[in-house]
Image 1 (cartoon, rainbow, N blue to C red):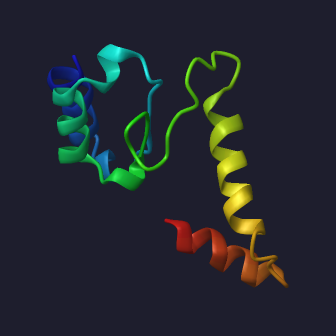
Image 2 (image 1 turned 60 degrees about the vertical axis):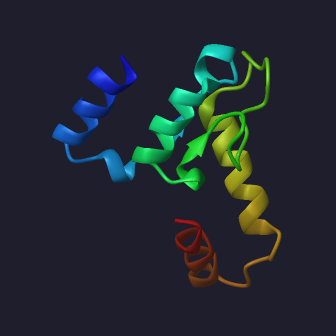
Length: 96
């Protein structure tokens, strides 16, 4: 389904390079073939999952993608304490 439908739809819509792919760490989701497919279409920094640099917290059904991603973004941006709004915008832009 991932290869045959999801990736094709993202490619047809021209948004494959604009997607941050998030999945939980369920065993079928971290199979070697799935990880290989994700690395083929996304860079490691654009996948949130087990065995990738940004790991999805295991067994966390109560956390939503926005809770996780915005918390991650905030932690990385505010560790340097931007002094002004332009500095804040530059810090956010540098992450992508």
